[in-house]
Each structure stands twice: as C-alpha cells, then as structure tokens.
Length: 77
Image (cartoon, rainbow, N blue to C red):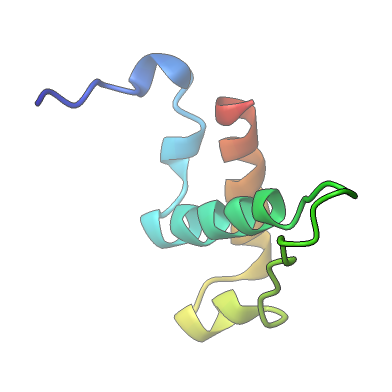
C-alpha cells in the first residue's frame, strides 16, 4: 500500500515549522475537541476531557501547542 504525500495540503510548509511533539499535542487537542461534540438526541456520547495543560508534562510550551494547533487547523480545514 502506498501512503500518499500530504505536502500539497500545506504548500507553504507552515505545519512543518513546528516540532513533532508540539504537532502531536496539537493533534490530540484537535481530536479531543472533535470528539467532544455530540447531538442532543444521542445520549451515548461523552465529552472528552483532558487534564489542564497536560502537554507541559512533555516539556512543550503552551505557546508552541497553540501555534501548532492553528497551523494544523489551517491545513485540515
């Protein structure tokens, strides 16, 4: 199986300017935000909650996570 190159999605390479660990934290935050959305008629979903500032345990600054999150959001939206 061939894995496609995702570079065309981010032609300016904005996401690649961030450290991999910051991008990983940002991806987890974006996934948690997406998973926390449910519909009113479905009682089966549960909001995803993460500890406050959990990325600090990985020695990643809040500014780095926010910047990486915005870069990923631009690429993925």
